[in-house]
Amino acid sequence: MIFLSHWINGKTPCYGGRQENLVIEPSSRMEEGATSNSLKVHLSNHVGTHMDFPRHFDAQGKTLSDYSAIDLSFQAPKLISMELLPEHMISVEDLKDHVDDQMDFLLLRTGFEKRRGEESYWNNNPGFLPEVGFWLREEFPKVRAIGFDFISLTCFQKRELGREAHRAFLNPFKDKPPILIVEDMKLAHAPHTLRRIHLAPLMIENADGAPVTVLAE
Image (cartoon, rainbow, N blue to C red; front, side):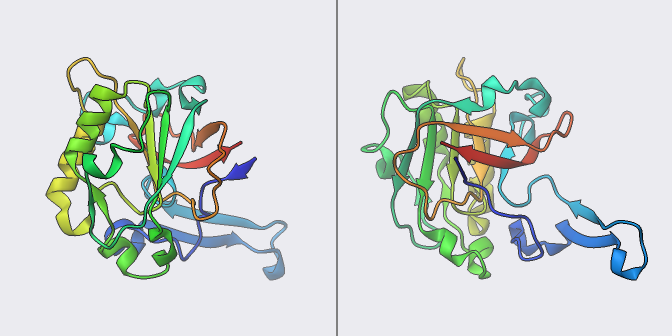
């Protein structure tokens, strides 16, 4: 078993550089005379390795509360590796030779993770074109989730296109189920021999998204 999630700490990048969305500080310290140590954590539900559920872009969409543990377990993940330049918009053409009919979780390793300590990680990240969401839902109905090693499905420099892409994955489309999104994953050393993946989101009732621990076999 390995983790495919990053630790949440003071260096965790936030979308748009909004570091006020993450504050971790002591609330009691034994070294200062307290009887125990504890932390106070303030964070957006879209910080660090996290999941987007349909409610994120659909006012009537499903939330975390609508998913069971079985729904968040994947038996046929596939890791695809391709180096991407900043602000590259991922298209169907980029993926069409790598996706197959059996996979249920598409993982994309782009190499952008190495920039995670730089401003370019959130300011110039790659993103997805809306066509990818529609194409996967139409042609590969077994795909129930997608994950990648950059901060958001939305390229920060092309935000309106990114909102459309989120809706393409999450909002109602014909009779096709939504595809869950896992952003800011730790994939640099993940093997291509992944057998199963289990998603364990922070159990926030009715959440449109949540930090998630990704466990892989």
